Every structure is written in structure tokens, then in C-alpha cells.
Length: 436
Ligand SMILES: [Zn+2]
Ligand SMILES: [Zn+2]
Image (cartoon, rainbow, N blue to C red; front, side, top):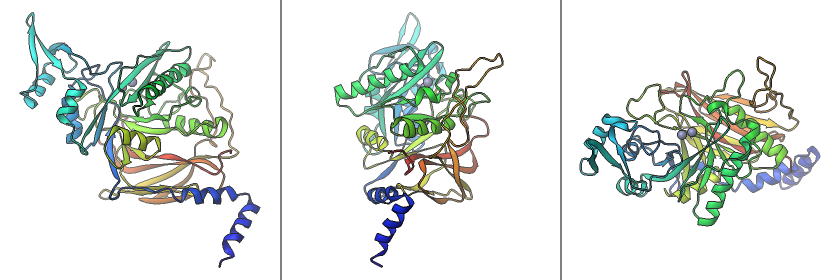
């Protein structure tokens, strides 16, 4: 028996897969993503609007909604503003109007600050610090200050959420979509460097206004996250006949970064982008549609940022996982089964030898559209499909990356797009086929 490992290495060398064995040994030390005595799954939403910008409710009411729905953390991300100053608003002019005010007053009767100015009823918007002090509870419910940096290039909206931001970041602009993204990423990295505060930025809803293509996104240095699922009904997660879906964008981005640019993976987030909190469900932009589950030892901004930068999370629009385990040899998934739901687990990736050529999308008048190029099926292939709550994908040796997507038999109860199922998205694992 003791000769077998040597034989194995010799055989592997002959087959040209020695790298698989050596890196598998390294990553065998990596722990699976699974709750334990010192590790917990924390559920959070990282895209939230309030009366501080274009949401229709007050910070404290929104925080209460998420707390009541078993979330562990919430990031407030209003457009180009931090809730850190004194601001009075006319009650009737807020998006939520009188009904939102009445609900606030009923919920927090001794907390509301109001006044009448020239016969107009005004209320003071409580700051992030005040709301956090009142509603956050150590290790149970965490509020994080964020911002949706809302930039643009010509008519393309380019929005990026920064999490745990200590001061306002103004949109940086740029001469192309790609440059706008890169400039804002660089600004966040510089702020992190200067303040020492753990924070990160993510690219929001690439298909909102079909503003950001895979080609804009894949060369960005320092960008580790983007929204593969956004709950706002106007952001086209599924794309259309001329525009790639966000999942297709993800596969192109992963392939190009890993195989052609030697850049790290980009992780996919699911978020709400909630604006409307008063009629749930409806076909507006409501809370509760998409979230992340982060595995960390405690509930603080620093531990969450660190865990997510390490890829220790998955994204969900309804499917919960018990365990994810990955190494350079395999990727396995174990779903936390609900009732008699059934699950389809797809392992998706790109293999060495894929076709790197993309063709432009041409409009009716023969002009090239500013859309993600069309690549063939060798990018983002479904490598294996398993029906059931548990599956393991074993690498063959030529995979550049593999990720997994789990689809429930249950429809989403309040979907972003009609007909959406409930899903979970497992973060990509770099495979042995990545060029060294
Ligand atoms: Zn946005
Ligand atoms: Zn938003």
C-alpha cells in the first residue's frame, strides 16, 4: 500500500495533472463553509434605499422590517448621500408621504422629532448613528453605513455600493464606462488605505439601462463583487434578446479575468435594492427578494468584509445551504431542504480550450450595439446537472473555474421578474485549468 501514493504521482505526472494533486493537498486544509461552535451564517442585505434618497420609508422602519424578517445585518446605501447630518423633510413631500409618517409615529411615538414650518409639517430624518444606536444589538442585528455611489457615463447609469464607508464618496466620473467603474473602485481603495477601515465596493445591476457590459467589467482591477441578482424589477437580471443576462456576464467576466488577464475571480451578490416598503408583495422594488449568507465568527463590519473578500458566503433568492466545500479537486453543495421542495444543482464553468472570440450584437440598422459580446457555449458551460439536494462535482483537470447554481422547485414568492424560481448561487472556485 505504501507504494501507491508514489505510483499515483508518477501516473499523474504522466497524465500531466501533477498540479491537481499538489494544489489539492494545499487546499485540503481549507475548511468547508459550514456553521459550527465558532462560525455562524449571517443573513444580510447590501442594497437599501430610504428617505435619505429615493426610498419611501424611514431608516428606523426599514431596519425594523429586516430585523423582523430574521436578517442579521443590513447596509443602508442611499444615492450619493450618508445619513450623517441634520436634515428636516416636509412629510408630504417624502416618497412615503403621510402614511409612512403615521406608521413611524405609531411605532416610535417617543422618538420622532417634528416641527411645523409655515404650516408645513416636517420631520427630522434620524441619522445612521442614531438609528444604529437604537436598533442594533450586539451579535444579533448589525446596521452598516454604506452608499450607492451613483455615477454615469453619458446616459449609462453606473452605480456602485460601498459598504462600511466612513465618509461620503462623490462619483468620480471618467471617459468611458470602464474608466468610471475603475475610478470609483480606486477611490474606495484609496479611502480604505487612508482610513484603515475595512470596506469594499461592488458593481450594481449591470443591466440597469444595459449600462455595463461584461467587457466593461472584466478588466477592472480591485473589483471583487458584482450583483448577479438585484430585486428591483427594472434591472433586467435575465437580459433580453440583445443583452446577456447577469449570469452570462458573470461567466464571461470570470473566464476573461482568470484565463486571459490573470485577475482574481469576481463574486456574485444577491441584493434587494429596496425602495418601496408599504405594500409587500407588489410589483415595485420591495425588501426580501435577494440576500447574502456570510459565514463568520462574529457579527461586525470587519469580520463580514473579511469573510466576503475570502469568498466565505453564498447568495440566495430563497434557497438555504447547509454546507459548501471546495478544493481544487471538487466542489460540493448540501442544501437545507424545505418541506417537499426539490432542487436542481448545476455546476457551471469554462474549460481550457474555450473559444475566446466574442461577436458584436448588431441592431436593426446594422450598427453595433453597446452590448456584451456574444461568445459561444464553451464559456460558462453547464458541466454537470444533479437532481437532488446534495451534489459533488469532481474536477477533470481542465476547468478554469467552476461555480454552482441551485434552483428550487418553488417559485419565488415575490419575484424581481415574473416566473423567477428561488435560487442560490455558490461562488466560483478556481480550477486546475487556469493558466499558471
Ligand atoms: Zn442603482
Ligand atoms: Zn439602488
